[in-house]
Length: 127
Length: 126
Image 1 (cartoon, rainbow over the protein chains, first blue to last red):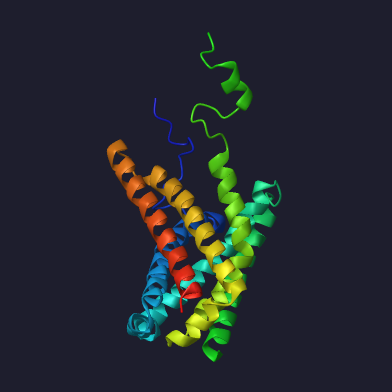
Image 2 (cartoon, chains in turn green, red):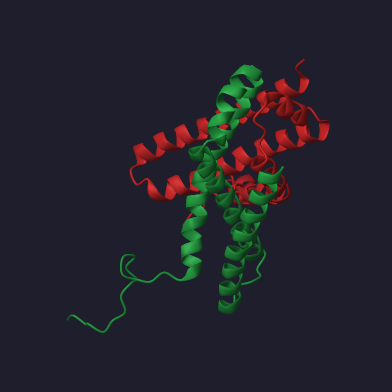
């Protein structure tokens, strides 16, 4: 009864995911990370609402190396979620479903993310 | 088969969960609102000041206050809707899912409220 030629469903561990699938799961991961990152930034804002002393006690942690890694990760996640989110908004109104277009916008989202992260980091560091 | 739904329920078209496409639609509306706000805050976050006086002077500008309050409400509403989808997809047990959803919703509500109140306190404070 067994038919060895029948198609099997793609198994996540051995199936090479297309770029859009990778971006899809990354969209979720960055979304969850951004939610927690926003809570951390609200914590900083709450410290500022307590006054100068508590803000200036907490802010240096964001300037330290681990804080800078968080900030860079946050900005990268923000822009990836932003760019990929715009792809989703176009899909929602019915555009961009052709395979070539899907692949092109995926690559465009990644390039735009890197450019935006780099520019923001440069402007922020200088300012 | 007999339809047990009332004529009112049918004409409202909201289905058995009684919210129709509300979740989907609100996620998209907050996404649209967040397009300009996210671009703006990205640059602000990268230039986060180390001293309180600079931060407070920035928050106190009327347009910045308004934008920050809008941003915080939209972000945590968008996060609540998004986290809900992820939790519903990956937490299999019903009891676990209910508990994690409850915690996630409460965290979004809590941090959203703390964020808005903090901005207003800095903005209106002496």
